[in-house]
Image (cartoon, rainbow over all chains, first blue to last red):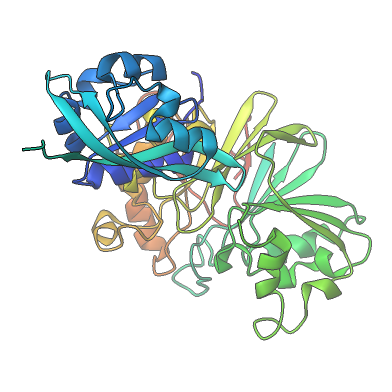
Length: 134
Length: 285
């Protein structure tokens, strides 16, 4: 039996997210998606149980994040990616495609999860879907 | 590895006729490793008597692994005789804090007004270090520390020697952040306890008590047993007994835990002062 498991900070973050009614998504230190809550599933168009853990590259392919000028965003350019790479909180808006086929504008606050002052074990992203412009 | 329990009570020392069977001293466990090295887990009031026993030998080096700094895990330090004798070399290891060193945090207790004598006055050579993030060797054993779910920075320890594993997680509330049917890797402490021969685990509450103490950092006996099963532990030792729990009440809880044991597990036991276990060679109690 391999004994690897996520850092406790990620375990607690995941537990926190399951209890939040606000859409929340968690990536690990590699940028891979490790969890999103039921509220996030409403925005992303499918539940975490259906999708499961995802590598960063697959996450891009599935949701096609784009700037508000419709320029493609790489994983590193999304708020979660910036928070992970630059170890700072980020707040930004962008477009994405839900797996239910709907295009959405979302606003994200992403912040790094430090388990030690020098160690980031992941990022928590809390986001909101903005109402479509009239 | 020989394991000796010097204190298995949680939260507060609880001496008296109702607890004399399992003991009233707070957490302290001595490990005698195969190469003769002594490793100590926690410094609750049980470490006082252990210290007296250690004085019977020549001064030497000791490693003391602290799970955390709640008083019931450090309150014995002021009466740990080797600390107050020149010639002893004591290496204290514990969880890190972003705001203060381990020595500074322990000194908050070992200094006036909480204690009359400051840590700096101790004649022994005492060093305080954050436990390494990667497994490290002490004598003939390999030690691993991981943060576990409890109030404040708290470690559990995994000690492996000659293919036998002791997991020591005395203060732990794994099912605050997991559900009973979660994947094991999302349960706090799982990697420390996985496939351990013996797990000494927080078993502080009854199920009824736990309902009103959710988030206090401790487990019900039901959760302790569930955690042991999830981790594939061979034998659970109920540990960190509630200070209000009498010997008779502890034995009633034991029956509840024993009823859940599966075919691939050994019967559980209640950790008590004086209990001695040789891992891999059966109990020497």
